[in-house]
Image (cartoon, rainbow, N blue to C red; front, side, top):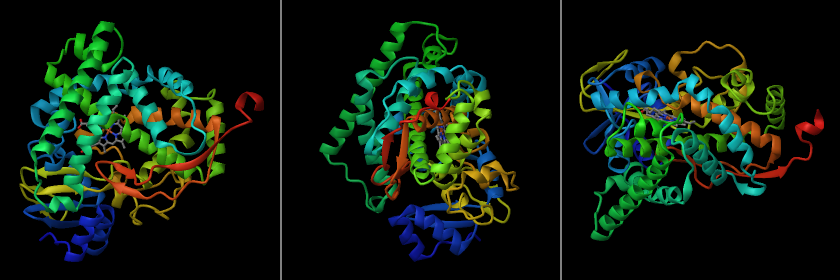
Length: 432
Ligand code: HEM
């Protein structure tokens, strides 16, 4: 029998999801069930069981009910679709995200990062990072520039996602959603705004015509031309999944780095050795410490802190069987700080990645795993190292404000990522 979480843990989960999943694992072990109304939500935190869940394929598992709810906002794209519809979507997008293909985007990413003005003073660095990662995504994956309409799209998207998140992750989920006419009208208006902004983006890329190495170009002019609904779902899914996740990761990395000047210096020296900023994946391979900074940031502050599945056919774990209808969550938040796999788990120590260590495959899975592994994982790592190398060359980091984390669809800081950035006097060219 799967143990059921105690009422006090249940209450913690409702008020603070991160503390709730952590306490549930400590009190009840690697497999525990939360009963939320009629929903049976099973939390799985042993790497071997996570392996079983993530590698199970449709029709044994599908995306969880919560994730599926996103389709109402972003269309039925890569994040939410299952079965044949999903396979077709992934087949079309996958060639644009292979390491070989991304290699060709590295120089453009570097140029965009270099042309962005670095923030200085006592600031929240997130807005800068969000706009930069958006520029990088739109240039490479959509083959155009963000233009004014994308700011509108993101505004509408933020309202819709906030609404969705409030219903999904907070105490509001205990109450039935009250859809007043005003609320319905607002939702319609936001969706219409989103649609017209995405249409404008597509129109701009269409005017550029065929050619180019972007995904949108191939969806518009290639062999796999997409119908308007599929196109819309692809674009919105990539917008949602493909820039804020990296911006948050970069923000958390800067927060951690601001207390570790020695790590910043090591990162700079590694970047200088490849000419300042990586221009291809081979340069990235030559920057193990920079990669370790990103890896360690994604361990301690995993932007995606838990993933959801619904069981469709019985699935045996090591000691339990998950039954059809159960919702399953695999929380990176708990596993990435489990002392069974991590020494001194609450310390941010990029150095741990520079040494070989034996641990189960799914003791670390910031990008998920199995057939639904993040399609943008190589992209995210490359752009993260490019942006970090560019920024630390230009500014000194200090005085990070305490980071209060807020679990929403992604792990977000409650009050931004505030730190002090001072322009650097001694640049590489002067040192050389
Ligand atoms: C540090 C940044 C990122 C993190 C931590 C992250 C994390 C994840 C995770 C954990 C999943 C798996 C979800 C699941 O199995 O339920 C996922 C899926 C996905 N990610 Fe990422 N991601 C990042 C960046 C990106 C980027 C840059 C893109 C696109 C440019 C992207 C596009 C996607 C898509 C489309 C999926 C769905 C894949 C599928 O089911 O086939 N992600 N991501």
